[in-house]
Image (cartoon, rainbow, N blue to C red; front, side):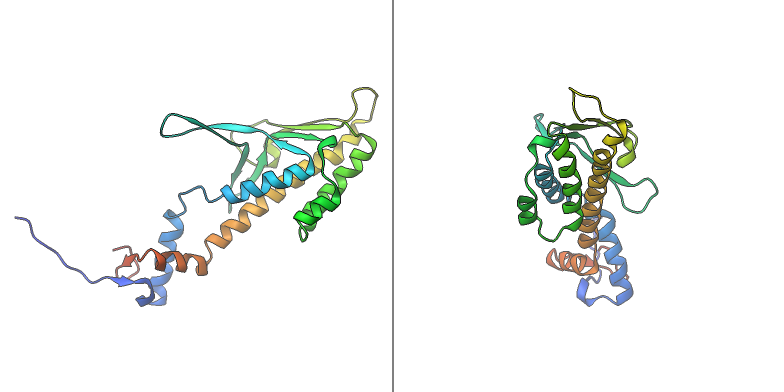
Length: 212
C-alpha cells in the first residue's frame, strides 16, 4: 500500500562545516552544466577585434532543429595535462585598432597590450600581413592543436623566421583565452559564489550534506 515517509532536512546555513564542504562538492560536480563560458567568449571576440583577428564560427545544432553559429573557440580544463584553449581564425594587420583604442577598452590588461604591441610592430613593416589558425587535431583543444600559417607579403620575399613573432602572438592569445576561462571558472566555483547559489536556490540537504 502507498505510504508516506518523512525525514529531516537542513538548509545550507544549518549544516556543519564538514557537511557544507560535501554540499559544495555536489554543486561543483553537477551544477555548472550550462554554458558558463559565454561571457568569456564575448570578451575574447571583443579583444580579437582590437588585435585585428577575425575569429571563425562553428555550427551548433539547437533542440528546435535550427542552427546557431558560435565562435570557433575550443578549450578543456582545468586540472589535466594537455588542458588549454585555441581558436580558429585569421589575423589581418590592416584591421588592427590602435594601441590607444585597445588601452581604453582593456586599461589594466598588460598581457593583451603586450600582444598588441608585438603584432603592431609586424604591421609597421608588413601592413598587409595575415596569419590563419586552423585545427590540426580534433582530439585536443590547446594551443598546440592548431596549425598556423603566416603570410607577411605576397609581393616580396621574406625570411620564414620573420613569421615567428606573429605565430607567437597567436599562441600567447590562446594562453590569454585559457587564463580568462580559468579565472572565470575559479570565480564561479569559489566557496563564496557556490554558497550564494546554493542558498539562493534553497536546496535542502541531509545532515551529512547530501542533497535531500
